[in-house]
Image 1 (cartoon, rainbow, N blue to C red):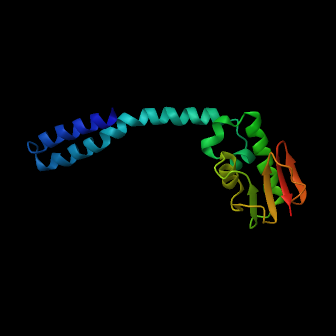
Image 2: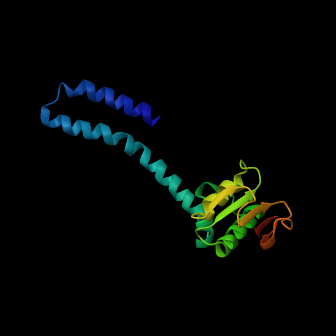
Image 3: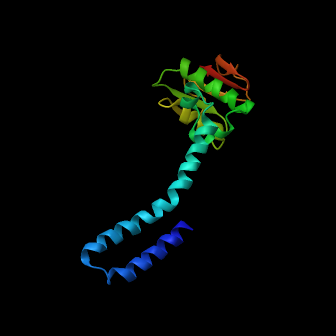
Length: 156
């Protein structure tokens, strides 16, 4: 809708530009460029205000962990479990370490873990000093350091 209105304003400006004095053409150009912004700004501000209201319950430690695109579902029990796990991993694992994971790399929690654990590097495989597991026993890999729900961090 905004694009259509902006194109219509541009067409009208093109038509009027030849009929205006040179000093007035700049004003017309500014008006045409500002028109889409004026139309879109109220909706954008409403959307941002809604996002702020929905995420005001997120505390500072969770905000470091939870990627902005995942915060809407942060109150679900699984998400809270993941957040507690990632916070615990950040406390234990040094910032320059590599953390292996044993899971399907397409799983969403792995991408979230990589985002939340940065600058630590999350790589696939169990051949690292630190290994994250989900829904798997870690006894065969080494000593379990952190266990939160179905997530565990193993030190090999």
